[in-house]
Amino acid sequence: LIEIFKNGEDVHAGVAMRVFKVSKESVDKAMRTKAKTINFGILYGMGVNALKVNLGVDRKEAEGFYNQYFKTFTGLAKYLEETKAEAGRQGYTETMFGRRRYFTGIKSPLPYVRAQAERMAINAPMQGTQADLIKIAMKKIDDHIKRESHEKDMRLILQVHDELVYEVKGSLVGEAVAHFKQIMETVLPKDKTFGVPIIVEVEVGENWGEMQHV
Image (cartoon, rainbow, N blue to C red; front, side):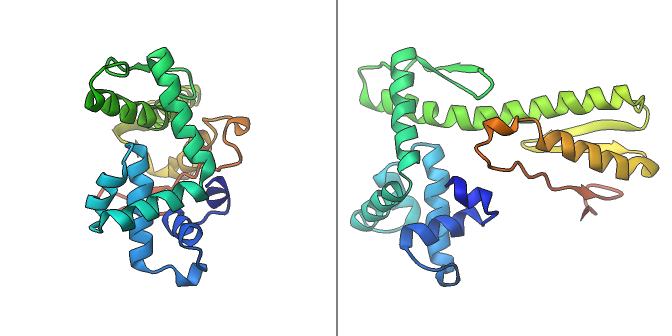
């Protein structure tokens, strides 16, 4: 999975290639859709039954795809099991920056309550780290704006999940693009990324409805 990101591949097509054991050219829309469904489903602890419903296939096919996925991505399977076990022991999981989330139901005697807590425990370190990254980026960019005395010329308008929207004086757009992009892409130290690049895409426009990639 790390190799897919390091190579700059389309993650869903890359997963489909490896799970279905086909060439890049042979990955069709249906294969990519299946890979996409389980890629996102894994983040929420999706099991065989949920996968069956989301893919619209019978249990046997869903189980075969599920098993092949984890047979291919053994490191991911290990991570999921270790995360659930760790949450069970400690009652919480942590982001890469050490922020904890506690799960009151992780030791529940009720299977469905415990399973829900385990799904959240799997998801929290990933989405929590993403949330940490964008918050740290916002702070670092704000520090840069103040350091350069650009408070009147650059200001944050919105944060939308992993996207930041700034209003910038026209003559300073080029400078803002270069610095903001560099700051966001280096929030996580290289020794923590396992070689996976953090890629930031930039769009510029007179308003939010007329943005162009730069």
